[in-house]
Image 1 (cartoon, helix red, strand yellow):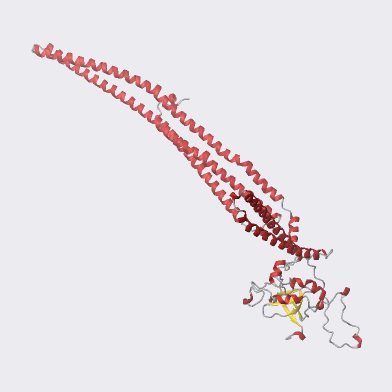
Image 2 (tube, helix red, strand yellow):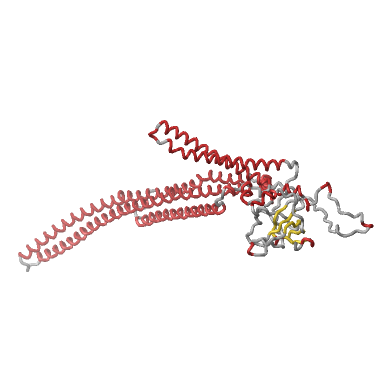
Length: 544
C-alpha cells in the first residue's frame, strides 16, 4: 500500500496522523522518563536504608557473630543491587529517553519540511487553476461581445435607413470583437492545457512523492518505537546476571549463619575463667551459749574436706586479692588485672599483636631511612646524610619503647596463662551478667539512693598502701552478712559480681561513698553498691 496512490486526496488527514504519531512517541518518552525517575528514587532509598542499618563502626565494634556478618553481607549485596537499579535508570536515560527526544525533534523538522512542500505544490496548482479560470471567463466574455457585435452589424446591414458609415463602423467593430474572441480562445486553450499538465504532475508525481516521504517517516517512527521498546527490556535484561549474583550472595549469607559458632563466640567473649561458688558453710551463732550436759554432744559443724572457714579464708583470699585489692588505678588499668583471667588473656594477646604491628612499621621505617642514608652518603648531591640521623634515632627509640611494652605485656600474659593452666580440669565459670528480675526495678543511674553519688566509683586508696596489702596475713574479719536485692555485673575496677538473692559476708561498712566491701563464700572480696544489698550486722560489730 502506498499513501501517494491510495490517499492522494487525504492531505489534511495525513497531516493529523503524522502529528499524532509524533505526540505518541513523545508520550512514550515521557513514560520512560517517569520510569527511570522511579528507579532513581528506588535506588536512593535502598542506599539510604543500607546506610541506616550499616553505620560506621570502630575496629573493636566489628561484628563477629555469623548472624551479624551475614546481615551485613546482605546489606552489601543490597547496596550492589541498588547500584544496578542506578545503572538501569542511567541506561534508560541515555539509550531510550534521550534517543527518543532527539528522534522526536528530527521527526518534527522532517514532517514540517514535507508538509511545506505539499502546501507549496497545492498552492502552485491552485494558481494554475486560477489562470485557466480567468482565461476561460475572458474567452466567454469576448464571445458574448462578439455575438453582440454580430447582431448589431446584421441589424444595421438589413436596415435601409442606416448609413453606409454606420454599417462600416459596425462591421469593423464585429471584426475587432471576433479577433479578440479568437485570441481569448487561444489563451484559454493554452491555460487549460497547462493546468491539465500541472494537475497531472501534481497528483501523479509531486503529491505521491511527498506522501511517500511522509509514509517513510511514519514507518521509521514506528520502527524506532519498536527498537526503544526492545532497548527498554534489554536494559533490564543486562542487569539480571548481576542482580542474580546479588540474590545468590544473600542466599549464601543466609546459609553462613551458624548457631553453634555464635554460641561459641558468646562463650569466648564472656568467659571469665573463675570457678563457680562453693556451698555456704553453716554459721553457728550459738557458740557463746553455755550448753547443758545433755546437749554437750552438739558442736559446731566441721567443714567438710578440711575446707577453711570463709571468715578466715586466708589462702583463698590471698589468691584472689590481686583482683580486688587496693591497687593503684593506673597499674591496674595497664595490666588489665581488673578483667577476668580469660578476658584479660585475650586483651593482652590483642595488645601484643597490635604492638608487634607497630614495631614492624617502625622497623620498616628504620630500614628505609638507613637505605636513604646510604644513598645520600654515596651521592652527597642528593642530600645530607646527617639530616636523617635524628629521625633514625627517634625511630630506634620508638622501637625500644615498643619492645619494652611487648616484653611487659608478654610477662603479664605468661602470668595469666600460668594461672589459667594451673586450674587443670576445673570447670569454667558461667555467665555472671544477670539482669533485674521481672517485677522488680533496680535503681537507675546510681548505686545508691543519694543522687550526689550517681557516678561514684569504688574507693581508691593511696597507692603507698598497696605494697603492704599482700604483707597482711590476717584478712578483714566478718562483721555481718547481706542479701543481694538486685544483680550487679561488677564491671568496674575493684567491684564484685553478685546475683540476686545471693548471700555475702560484710567485711567493711559503707563509709559514706555508697559502697560496701563484701566477701563471697569462695573467699573473693570486692565492693558492691550499698543500695543493692540488704545488710545485717552482727551485734558485737555495730558501732565499732
